[in-house]
Image (cartoon, rainbow, N blue to C red; front, side, top):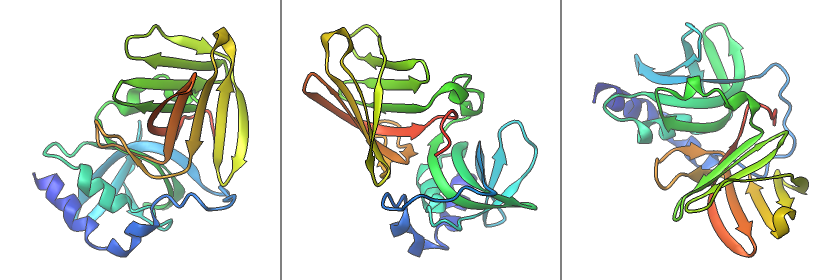
Length: 217
């Protein structure tokens, strides 16, 4: 419980930032000088520390973008305290000035995901279970009780960071609607930076999503 308590104490410091999480109305943001990184979050000496995957650096998190990562980490922290985060920011010495949070979740193995760099987008939901993996080769849809469905797609930008992926392959109308909005996975509690809605022949299923390593938004 020590790590969990430490994260809670860290989270109490900037509570005013909570309402700023994932502002989907931001216009185009410059990523100049920033890097997208994945790694582990821990609490140390009253601070939140980020260690990038396959890297020994310990970077103190400065939430300059108002992402509320401190509060999200405190909510997710458990006895083991192993949290994975996917973020964008600028490294200055031993400090990470965080500008965007893509996702944070309980995981000790996410750094080893071999498919992350190939994905453009991943979206998933529950009740019934479904997930969509989007890459440059197409869109693969897995639904509970159904065989995997691989289809080509067309992307349409809708403004305010929203977009739609659609396909009419296999005599089906398939649409994946995505919006930049804080989304909490109802099963795992993980926080992702986009909400998603899968529509197949008029049937609607809702969930969360995040950009994979192949997309630099």
